[in-house]
Image 1 (cartoon, one colour):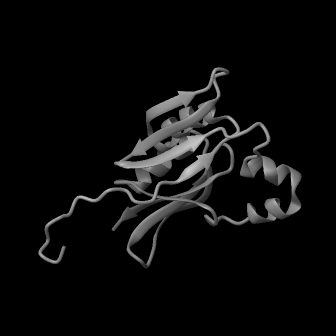
Image 2: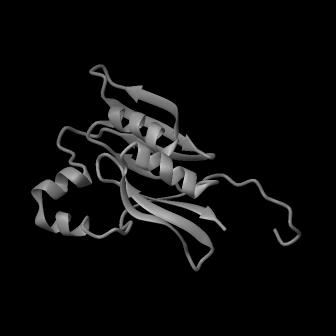
Length: 146
């Protein structure tokens, strides 16, 4: 606010991401990007039908929707156009996540073999950012406010 006081806000947009192997994705996202698993629902076969991961108060929902679903990485294996889309380092479809220390976060992601699309860099709009893709090719931009 103008007087310097902070207003508590509720997250109004929640990313929902599909994974071919949601259980493996949950484990990897927690290790590589520092998420914490809030909840997981599975069907009788053990398939994750809904999960929520949290990072710094923000939530991402994920699931394994159907056996026909193909991740961005798998789709690129089968489609020239998808391969071209993924050949650029930009986050065309993905999530923007604020973290307190983007350089430390970057090192953690590298340690867990995230595909690094761009190194940490100060942006003219007041953030330090880097871009990465996860184990199934979903793209993430991590940022720290400068």
